[in-house]
Image 1 (cartoon, rainbow, N blue to C red):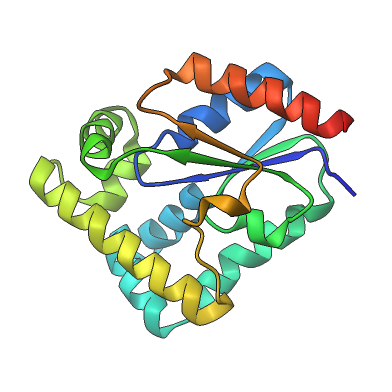
Image 2: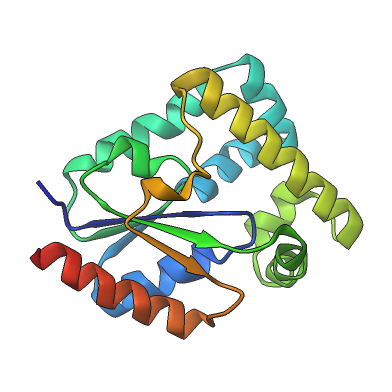
Length: 188
């Protein structure tokens, strides 16, 4: 049975957070970000998000904490979830993947660092080359953990109801596409 839940995944810097924010606002839905939750765990522990990712490679409880929050949202109504694994935990959701080449993501992440205090604190860097390297390390760590823990590859696009190239569509266009496709999906 389809749920009034939209799960958004995508590459680093693909616009997951911005899309989820605007989408939730336009639809009047609640918003949850597992990335923000994960970053806050790192800040609370006094370590960067990359250090937390490395620690999670040997301590599965870190991911399980985030995943438990996601599973708890399975019975929610009218929620947009920005997460790399929510599509897996809530298969009845409308599953969206935002696609963006990694080199394009670097600039977006740097711009986001200027406006996002939690991300700035959790990344612990402002140098573009260092940020890009950390992005790659984080993605590699996450992919390894998700495979080891759950045997999932969240980058396989055939698992999603909708894939959008965020390099070819601006934020407003992406959100309008998601809303249009979601409304058709939920009716069908």
